[in-house]
Length: 133
Image 1 (cartoon, one colour):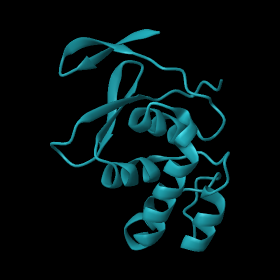
Image 2 (cartoon, rainbow, N blue to C red):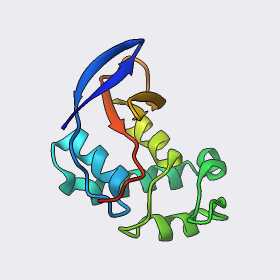
Image 3 (cartoon, helix red, strand yellow):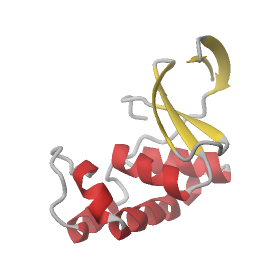
Image 4 (cartoon, rainbow, N blue to C red):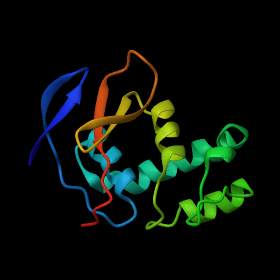
């Protein structure tokens, strides 16, 4: 499927790759962008969770459980986030932008939503959607 994104005021044609909406969609999307397959999503998830837990002082305030509350400890975060169907959030996207060699730009309805990563790195684009597949 093709979609147009508003990038710096210009409509740019982008290929949209369907991602399985099973709770691991953020990790599947990042896996696809990095490795060309969704099958590395578990390894991507583990890398991100490890990075967040290793940097818990920086990420605890933006971590969210399924109720929207912050995780109280990194151990609680690890136990929940390593479950294959636990959704990733802005916390995990921000961590991905630090550990992978890309800038991740997120678009919703064709409009820029947020970004994560170190400036100057290659850009990879993600489509935010609440539609489950």
